[in-house]
Image 1 (cartoon, rainbow, N blue to C red):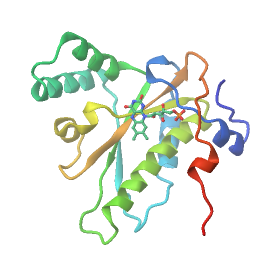
Image 2: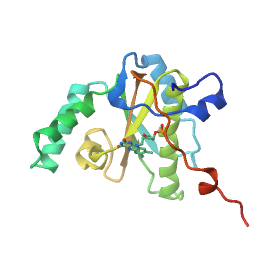
Image 3: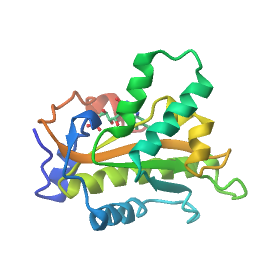
Length: 190
Ligand SMILES: Cc1cc2nc3c(=O)[nH]c(=O)nc-3n(C[C@H](O)[C@H](O)[C@H](O)COP(=O)(O)O)c2cc1C
């Protein structure tokens, strides 16, 4: 299957992530990416704090070097395969956006609510990319837990990486995956 973007409901009912390693060109151009990012900011945000930031990774080679340096410092015993996996991660898909949850600690809005807003922002970025005919994939992994990566991407110590969003064109069909039965996740009360 490919995502059905013929109507808003079809999009929501069929959206699937793509696997970043299977993404090929074209990716969004600068105007399309700006449009997606604007849509990503159009999400519920208690207190209007905009507690999230996006970092478009323009230089993949520099990003690969950042991952290699951080990994070497945090896991000096790393083997060749792990180093190669990091390099592959950095170079996959035409476009890569890092998302950072940047809660405002001084606000009366609880941190959890601000972090939920960050998740919504990342998802809207994925949804916008899908609606524009691309495919998106949201990955985390060790780099999202690395203080060195966070700092290098402009995050403060109290921020958290929300994930890496890869965007491109799928090189293969997207397989459907099982979804929870509604009665497993929804109940009426009382
Ligand atoms: C916060 C977050 C982090 C994720 N990190 C990974 C990851 O590191 N690797 C991975 O394979 N999938 C990860 N996923 C799952 C994929 O983004 C995707 O949702 C999943 O493959 C299901 O596909 P679907 O979106 O088409 O249902 C993550 C999802 C979320 C919400």
